[in-house]
Length: 479
Image (tube, rainbow, N blue to C red; front, side, top):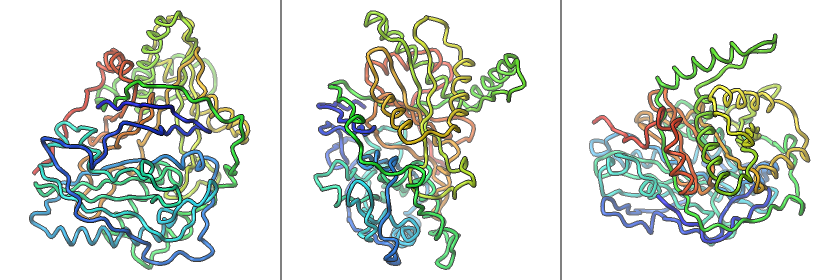
């Protein structure tokens, strides 16, 4: 699917949100194979009012950078609602969401300025929809344009003031064939990937009765003040990054990396890393995430090299940035389900000065080293500069952002009728991005890659991609 950007990317402290985008929304797509009909739109509030002393949720500066960003997701379930009462399931989802919002109460609030959320219990949007086709039309193979119909429209694209936009929207979709899809749209300003998937898991556990009204496991650990980690700031002028013009098309590519092939390559890489170790330092160990990251990065470097030759050899370096979850790296570790953006970016670099062969083992080595360096503490000014470098890319360099959902409870979102048969991100309009998640078999890795169209055409033809990944295979649901 191609999406055309018509104006600038205004970038202030790493915000990359286009002002004027030609983007398909659920209500504008007309498809010969499907039609989504909105039945009702309601608002779900926390089942218990938020206490007065908890009404203000302070944003860290990592939160502040993401207040304009929304994360779209959709989960598919094979449950047959033809043989069971869909209305009961719908009501269960609504009631359990209200209970989940008592633990994650900022999701029911609204931004009031650039520094805080008013936890005023205004609530989350809750949409009921019927889909006039079989689920297979959406999954065989998955189509990003069609998937977006199942996800609530991003409040960021509305004309509402930021203080009026929901921070969470949910859409419950019933297919003609009886299956269900639950689409969600979260504000990135109060939650990173870990917080989002753990919220979904908690919501499911409440629906199943695993967490009941008297269970205090979440009450004192979910909503934490992270401003001591990343103190909020008023972004100064020097962190305003120039806005590049672009009318280029952004395209999305879903790749499935074969688990057995990745395991074989990981074993080979680890043997080479062991053989190269000439000191008493800890031996670098590749993971399947590290191997797939290296394959994607290597293909992106190859694309950059072609670009280098096209612009008179002006490119000198290529960087890969990786978003690292800090919750289990704190001392003591933080509660895994807590809200907020508790991440930091690390950087691996590759010189484009020479046309040396791009070896997977060398790329893995740089990825692992970058993750280890992520343990080093930066003060705010240092990290500001680091983030600025990421987006203020000069003519002589290129960068790529990679984030991972591997290890998050993506497939544990169970409301009582089984785990999802598949889940997917919706369209994210940020080029030079890859988001990794575990495949349904637990061995392979799925990647959603976002690039400009001309770069993607070269990227998907790279040997490192063609040899280990298949492009957008169909999802089959057992009846």
